[in-house]
Length: 240
Ligand SMILES: [Zn+2]
Image (cartoon, rainbow, N blue to C red; front, side, top):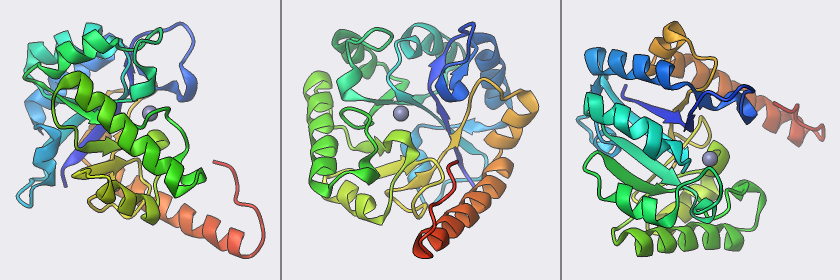
């Protein structure tokens, strides 16, 4: 099975970022070296093909942190590996995030594909479908205006989605969408493997080779079914 990796920030802050989403530049370099040797790193859209092989891995980044340009890109250039940046349109020009001019610049880079990640990074599964539709359409319009390119790939904010949102993604013209273990793992909720500060090389290898994904996905399916069961029985689901 092809694996799709999710990074956020390539940085080494003294304190972990929320959910420990930071990966240090030296760990990232080690991971890229391993990927370039043992996996076939492909542009994200190639993993959609029926012919996608189990050795394939795609690299994605969520949110649009500025260090994706200043720290991650030089390392990806060194190994000549492609990446997809899922940019939260409303975060552009805020401290720590890409500016509009930087987004325009990276969108022309041969190793980079730009995808959408909502307008304000909200919990789309907790809002009305009309509001969610606005997030999906408006973010796409802004990114397309800025980059002068078609933007038709989507990563769900917080990795969350459900069947209504999967339909909405198709309705809003997205070609495919990626979650993190949520939804049906179909065209508009494809599963990705999240990486962070605490992934040493051994765990990284398990994640990148699909072993971790298979067991973790099963665990999430079980947990979701259990939570739905609890809600139906009138008891609140456990927080995770
Ligand atoms: Zn995000």
